[in-house]
Length: 316
Image (cartoon, rainbow, N blue to C red; front, side, top):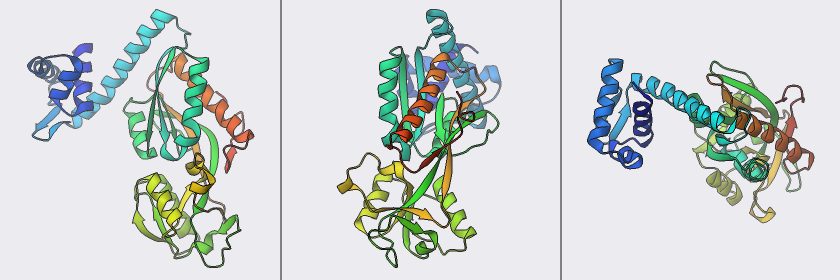
């Protein structure tokens, strides 16, 4: 096998189609198929499943995809460091932001990097944290912010903050319009909308209500932040989110928001990266920049409802 075959294979999996990959790579489709056949002969197992719906990797193909992306990433780092110097802060850095943090963190990161590191090209991904975890494990991201505070095999974790959760909308009952807090018990049987059952925020919500023996009434699974906020603002149901989810909205465009207390509900957030490959100088610079901006946004009162981890824990 060679680097060209690995690059072809990764593009086919990314696009889910031989035709689209061939178009992207400027390679004739028969030639692309021939190279993949040689790769499969070399490893001795089928790597792709072809159907009328497109192309998907086999179990062996998924393993090949993960390793191939890492190899290609290392080759790109090698070229960049040889060309620019081992300490050069340049090259491409792919970062994943959870949907709830994009509005408060993505633009400041983009602006700071453009001003300070013009040689770095950013790739920003926005998604639910579970999908970002998958992208990080597959080598498609250099960094991601995930809601965890422990290191797992293959992924190094740098805890940076804990964020509190709020109820958005009008729960009714004894909660007055001017109240800025909401006891968790006041949400018993209140109609709630929440992300799907595999979402980390949903799991945290279910565990917290179960632990406190408070009846949880989720009336719809909504994997869309704008829709969750629209429903909360409409008054038809409430939702539970961090304050960062509405940071970019004007006061008139925000649903009523109250901090949950008795107990306060928090979740950790960490900067994570794969430890299977060396971290580039550019990725180190971005990691440091994100930590710096989080501290600034907290100190300036822009990012509310968070508690920073001790500096020695979040050191970059």
